[in-house]
Image (cartoon, rainbow, N blue to C red):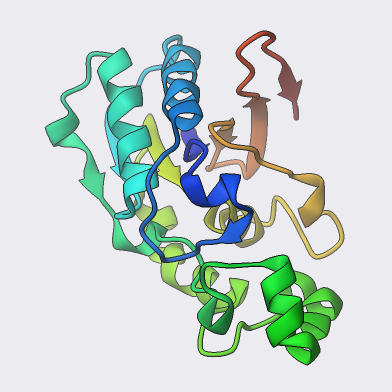
Length: 202
């Protein structure tokens, strides 16, 4: 199994900004979510920990590792795990995008994840850059990354497709327990401080 974790809430998440490759900090809530995620992975064997180079992911990984007595110096920074580059839309809110790039925002609505951001990336670009890492990453690996990257991994492994991709709404510090070899999700562990819920995908 591998364990895909979306980073904790960031300051950009609070402001509803598409931060992409912009390096923003975790919020206080995001740090609490990371600690909960750390407790949620305790039942599982973690031999390796990988993180996006962005602070919101790397700090989440460090907190999870601290909770599990894993040396944070052993976290492997994997550049291919960086979030999608939103290009012209980088670090803007939806309202700002609509105001400044109306036509392109309509294209984004129409093409969804197949849309290539002007001066940025598409999900196809993410799939291309993460494919080698996904092929080689060993079992019992914790992978802390971003929403767009997690969706792209699901596309690459043929777990999700164009019709059902948006059924997988991965919130901050949710954990996908993934059987990479058989191409299926075993469960999704939701990050809930007052209630924990596991969604089985047997």
